[in-house]
Image (cartoon, rainbow, N blue to C red; front, side, top):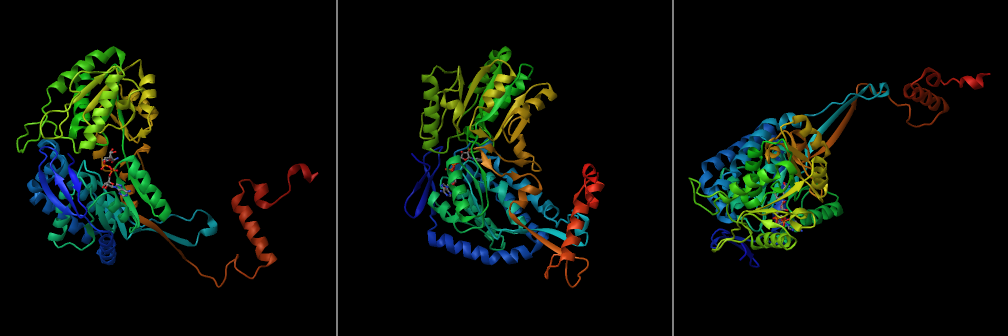
Length: 515
Ligand code: NAD
């Protein structure tokens, strides 16, 4: 069973929790992608001319529309992801916060800068650095957060003055289509639209825009990065992860175990910053594992309608994801690991996999090296922090990680040794919700980043430099005609300003040759 089947001209969406069809969406043809791009481009100059307050007003109206339609939107998220009601509710707060943040701060983040001339020779120059939007950007997103993923990035792009052509995952096209309808329903300027379909439609989108923000797998990120390179357009890539959790001997084990269970299994483990592997110092290994196994056995798996949550985690999104989890677990067990909980798919029509705690794992196993993106928590015993750090860094990925210790200074020391874009001390996930801090992966986990105050909106802009002059003589020293006097003056001036000692400044001969 696949959650979205691509007929030639429409996506058929099935709920991963029930297997039932929940909607159909027409696939956007190549010609329609080009037409969408053209109409978005046509509308962009007026959007840019609206200014920050004008654009913020539309984003605020869209936010209010989301709040007024919250229950319908969350029901759609759940219907196409199969998440538990609890996990479904994570989505909307992200959208609200990011809209409010960039609507409030865009004007100051993109205010003109006026660097001072770097040398007295340029003292008369007046410099301005301006941030002008890429006219049309693409936002291509995966299925694990139908609202959250695009909304982490879109508000900054719209506030920068860009038009945006979005492409949600073919697995979860319904929620995003509803949000685009919402933008149109409030009467907002036609600078936001979406193309629907699979990778071929995504590729067509990349070909018609001026900048791409992509969130998704490493394999697709490489393809998009290569195509953007060919087209000489910028891209930012938020890719997969294999986030390590390092539990030191002095950690608060109860808190660490609670975090491991939530961080490993939230959204059925289908988050880029899920806890994918745990390294625990030998003296506390048994106690930590007991706590995690007990808490995991208590988890309730299923898709509930809300509003009172009856389950903790829900379904996996696709049959392909379940197959990856089954392969990783089978590989680990074959190489000597033990499953303390789960280790199997649950019966029933939906794509449910029992939360699985694995021990006796090592780095010969796929579950410790490849992104699983599922409800598995492999826990490995280590002999001290040096080994934990070495194993954490033994990975192609570098998205984020966490360090668990009561010693703050030691936590910060270890953070500096980890090859990842973010480290949470005694917490998981929480870096993503610091909108003033950038989220970006190292190594194969990405290029560029999102959020992070000014950098999260400046990436949607081109920098334009305007240099003026306080005085404007008829000619300047380097200008034609060439003359020995002007050349000598320039050479003397350059020497005077460039040298850092008086002999060279004044062009005197070295002392030894003065005789
Ligand atoms: P995916 O790469 O298969 O697909 C993502 C999107 O790219 C989809 O919309 C897809 O249609 C589109 N696409 C596929 N081929 C394309 C092409 N050649 N050109 C343009 N677009 C193309 O990823 P997925 O399976 O949907 O999502 C899971 C992955 O996303 C995981 O690896 C996960 O770690 C990653 N992810 C990363 C972050 C982050 O912020 N770093 C967040 C969420 C998910």
